[in-house]
Image (cartoon, rainbow, N blue to C red; front, side, top):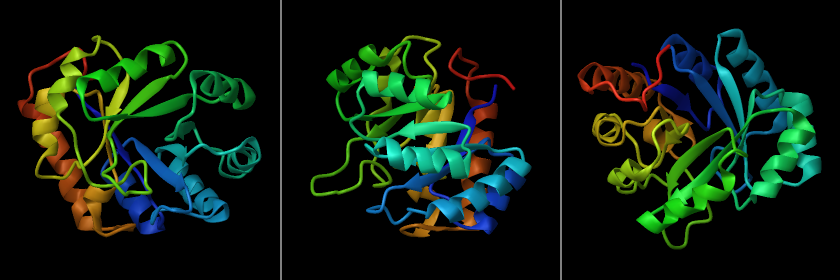
Length: 227
């Protein structure tokens, strides 16, 4: 069984091409000026077109963005998915799905077991979840902080819940993360960077290889999706 791999925070043609060469599944582009991975809409449109041509699904990542900003992104970048990484309510998720006709991935921050209770209002509204670690104190970034959470918490999830695991994943720990969580999808950003916002092609290689190696040793679970 094969986990979906999303390489997020892409900002160069070379990184997009490498993700495609390695048969990753999704390319994420971040629209959040505080992030070192932020890309201009025009640049993202060019990169997204390149990614689609190589068979990657494209994801526009935003944080509590208004309608005008999202209108521009959707019209120009033409993403396959919207990823909402802020405090967007279930009502906001539903409204954006109706407005754009696109599937929505809702990110939720996890540190302790009670944090998983936040899932319930989004069930049947969000098309997929992304579970990221809560940011460390003082961080202005809701994601991409290179910190993880206790993956054992995900054992509490209902089987069949569509989600991606994120937060502090690297080539050295992603195999353990998959074994413990059985996550159907993996999202990486800072874990394949040589500096904040700078994707390292060799690190992308090593990460994807570590995911695929782990899959051959991980017992088949309902969480893993077949391709």
